[in-house]
Image (cartoon, one colour):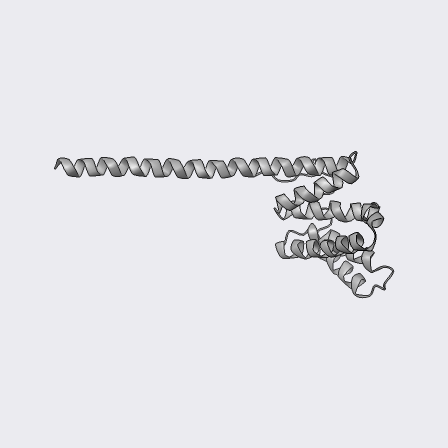
Length: 166
C-alpha cells in the first residue's frame, strides 16, 4: 500500500510529538469561552497526525464536534476559513485513519466550498489513489483466494481419480 510522503503534501505529520499534544491538552484545559474552539482545534490538529490510532480517533471526534457547532451556529461560519480549516483537517485525519469513504465525502464538501484550493485537490488525489490501491489489493486477495480454491479443487479431483483407479 502506498504511504503518504512529505513530497506529496506539505501538511503531513509534522507535529505528531507527545509534547505538542500535551501542551495543547493543557492549553484547552485552561481555555475560556473565547479561545475554546481555537484551542480545541489546535489539539485536534496534533491528534489527527498522531501515529496512534486512538489519538487520531480522538482528534477526529473533536473536529466532528467543532464542525457540528459551526454548522449549527451559522451557515456562514461553516463556510468561513474556520469551517474550511475544520473540514480539511478532518478529511486529512480520516485519510490517515483509513476512513476513506468519509474522508472523500468531507473533501468533496471542501472542494465545493473552495474549488481552487490546491491542498484540497491534492488531498482528493491522495484519497482517490489510496482507494484505487486498496481496491487493487482487494482484487488481488480475492483473485489469489479464487486461484487457491481452484487449485485445491483440481488437486482433490486428481486424488479422487487416483483412488477410483485402484
